[in-house]
Image 1 (cartoon, rainbow, N blue to C red):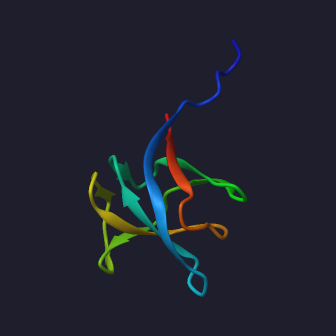
Image 2: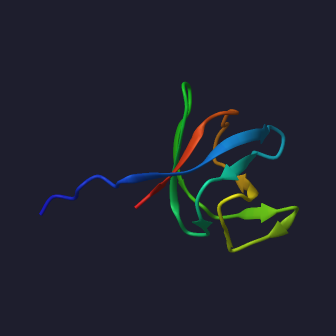
Length: 88
């Protein structure tokens, strides 16, 4: 049985990136939880990773829902306007 590629579901957009600490600010349009596999894509960005750390107003959270902005530790640089997908 061959594995079908993961489907991607849009969950948010990068609003800002803090270079020094490697954190992207994501405005969520859907729920995101620790442990979710995500894909961040843009004109020069193509990053897949697992959500290992996220914060709302400097407080660690397990999950966040649509309408919230989160700080997300990212493995490499992301850019404003990049789209964030959850792989399901």
